[in-house]
Length: 207
Image 1 (cartoon, rainbow, N blue to C red):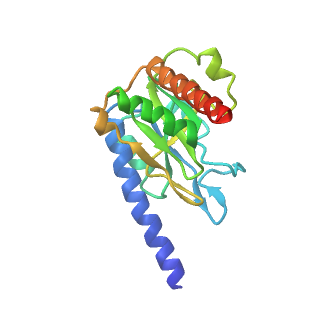
Image 2: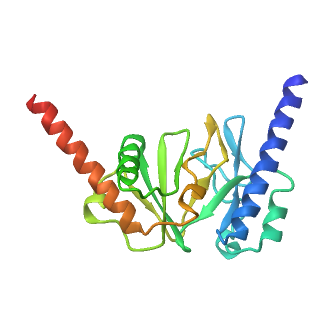
């Protein structure tokens, strides 16, 4: 019984926080959506969804709901602690990379004084937010650890819960004055990080 109460309180607290974040982002024009949420080893909130790898939009017609007004967005989080999703390809894209490359690119961006919004998941994936733009440079596209999240896709925003942890900001949008960089800016940083790592491996091998 005590465990049930704690679980209910946890969900209620997360729902309130997620709802507040969703409303704030919707006011800024971010195309936010409710997504499924973790419960006892599976993702709940959408009938017929068997996806166990991560959250998916609750509404089957989610693409028709992008750009919904903040007042309507607020109603989506009145019942359940839905994950907070951002529809990509509609002004915002995201470049997904692994932990090591993410840290390297973040260092490059800091070194030139260009902090950008960065999200990290409990599964060691990093997402660099960019303005919607062109595709990945060939060298990045050839790397299996790099994925461009664009049209017809979505990413999970903080503070959405996962099975083992919570999605969080590595660099909050406020740090960047809510300025979203071009995709070229982030891609250049990723290329620099990749080349730096390659040079380090070559030097180490020679030593």
